[in-house]
Image (cartoon, rainbow, N blue to C red):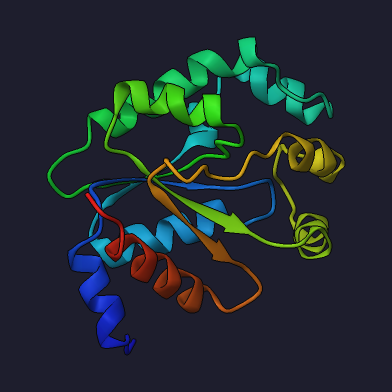
Length: 180
């Protein structure tokens, strides 16, 4: 695939620990995998780090509470902290500032790529998704919980609704522009 020169340059200067964040249906896993591939980094989907009780709860349409999330977020942080020299990209909702802060306790240099899209797009994506434990009925709960990145948080916001390569290009361009 041909890539714009600025996207290739962004890949070379991207941070070593990246969380691709957003609500259900935003494409965290898809974008995270593509971003990791472009960077030559390892990828982890934080859905795989949830304990079975969390997955059961969400499968039943019950939102997680902070007590459910703490051990999971600790695993996300530990996964990032253990990243090798190739870097690590993790797909994780990280909807609230306190969740991102908890991840940063273990991996302080983590940066965030917030995938942002309107409700209609997200709902359509969730409606088309099959075989995932997260039901579309939890989208509104997630949108209510979402706290956008604060100005003092290292990260970028990337708009959805364009092809995946363009989303990844925008993420790389934004990440390369972060001050470290």
